[in-house]
Image 1 (cartoon, rainbow, N blue to C red):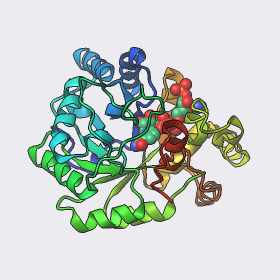
Image 2: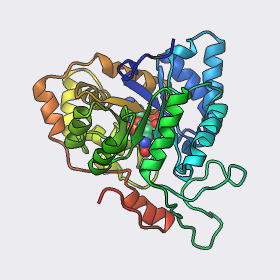
Image 3: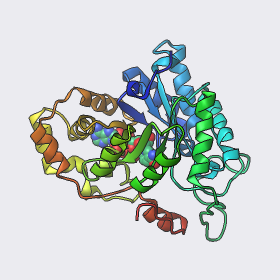
Length: 322
Ligand SMILES: NC(=O)c1ccc[n+]([C@@H]2O[C@H](COP(=O)([O-])OP(=O)(O)OC[C@H]3O[C@@H](n4cnc5c(N)ncnc54)[C@H](OP(=O)(O)O)[C@@H]3O)[C@@H](O)[C@H]2O)c1
């Protein structure tokens, strides 16, 4: 039986962003082997076929059943038009080799002009990467229309649950006014340097479950030149002291903090030992004082900000949080 409701979603999930297509099958297989049962995929990650192969290998070898796995994927920006949404989900399902997703999220509150599958898949951010100055080309589709398309997928059952990612509080309030099916999950960047307490509290008040991405902070963004090693959360003296006290690693403490505050998390590692280390976070019990010390590190540092990277990388001003 598939998971009955969102409360059954495994709280510590495995992230699939930036895992090269050539490695994703073996990484996913290994992650299932060490115990992950929740995977966070997306069309935009460009590796769904390989992720599907890893899942299939684990199923074939009897490591688990399909119904033991919680698989999330995300609707890319170029498929926001209601006529494209089902097509986008079908492509993701085909690539993953699955009949249904446990959760389908709107990846960003950003609608971009449609790019046919045959032209480019995944389409990424700019409309024509070969142009002299490649830019993003927005499409006039409201988020309400896109949400109605998502609701239809839920009604049909090929996406068991639906939700949104990268929504701010204003968009979420608005969504709650027009949704027939309320979003069940809000996926946002959150770590001790970006706690987003009010957004988390607001979502919780609406009965929406919050999943934190990039729970290790800068770690994911140094390789993209979107963060510098000096701002590593994992070397913060507060994290090091608490880690030392628990005979744990700072990464485990960051994850344990996220779990204690009631969010689920998705964390990525291509390294088998780190995969296991990260899973170990579920057994760590932090005191109230430790939790508030870690929350006190908040400095509103957002790494994944379209207002920054769209301008720098795609020659397009497209802030969504300002
Ligand atoms: N909805 C969205 O817009 C959105 C945006 C970003 C991310 N996400 C999702 O969230 C997932 C997780 O976020 P993320 O990948 O950005 O960042 P993350 O999981 O916080 O950090 C990943 C980075 O930390 C390293 N790492 C992992 N475990 C470690 C450990 N125990 N000690 C030290 N370093 C460790 C990894 O390196 P190694 O791999 O070499 O171990 C990698 O460089 C993504 O994979 C994706 O599924 C969603």
